[in-house]
Image (tube, rainbow, N blue to C red):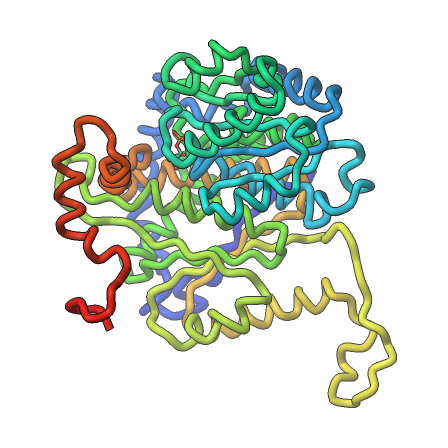
Length: 471
Ligand code: PA5
């Protein structure tokens, strides 16, 4: 099986010049530090501190996920709804979009007897009501996913669904709920136990954004017929491809290094631009992984660093007509990663009968050829303009290659954390907003904060005309 690979020619100074490109000397200078970072990671892994790296080998979890997925399929549910947010949803979306494709929910011949999949990572009432209009509760199974079991968005979704199911199905309502959560702790685990839901465990020590290869991402994938064993085999093969502490022999380490050097040369925006709409979800998942892991105020030594590249998702060729102008001529603050595929699942030809001679060059080409020409053309133009870019090539969008890609990005993120000297596994910055929301909703113990917020911000709630700084 051909592997995915990383082509970083166009970030090198030989291609784009020394001002914006990376020189061989810069790579040489960081080589030893990168090797040390990798060795530390290996040590932490063997000490059991990085369990996400061993997920591809967890046969027990795969067997349990397959068992639950088979049970769902046997019970002939028409719809499978994931309730979760952040790392408890984005991996599902990435797998579903990439491997089930755009017509999965629309066409029964694509689903081949599997239920429709809905991943609801929002509490927007219009979306939630839309979903409820679309499904038949009795024929729907809800997979509520929350590691902490306390995330307000997910808990609110869950409480609404639980109430509706109880009203409709009575005491046996738990048969339509599957909880994926911490093996021991949290409100969700407790309720699931009391009301007899099927449960799946999120392995200890695996954080949300690193959990796509746990039951978090694997159950909805297995229910929709994705070959999860192939995805895990892909992840394991990427693990094997990234065993060396030499940047030249380890794509995850090399890409972490390239991103880190680029950042330090002022390229603080990391654009992920797939040339396949099916990979849009992967790009979104990557953006969360990169942002929440690397955006940190403090270094591991407690120094204030305010570090972190800003990830941006773009889509080729759509964003050639939106973002590209900025990437070509705006500030030199970006490094772009193209995600490209060798083979699309289907093909479609542009007719040879072209009724205008200025368009005749399109005649007889396929849309894939057009896509490839646009990608190459864009990449060449960016390179000639001194804009650093690299390419991750997937031979095809298969479970194996998506498994490789996700693992590559997870490992790269952990290594980038080490290179930046920050902890990529926490997210202290999101706590303040959460606390405020809980206070405003009246959580016990936060009464003082509620008052403060209402005094300083609450009065502005409606953006009333006539107030200071409202026009
Ligand atoms: O990556 C993370 O840790 C977060 O994005 C979480 O996944 C997100 O906040 C949801 O958390 P939980 O699974 O506890 O509901």
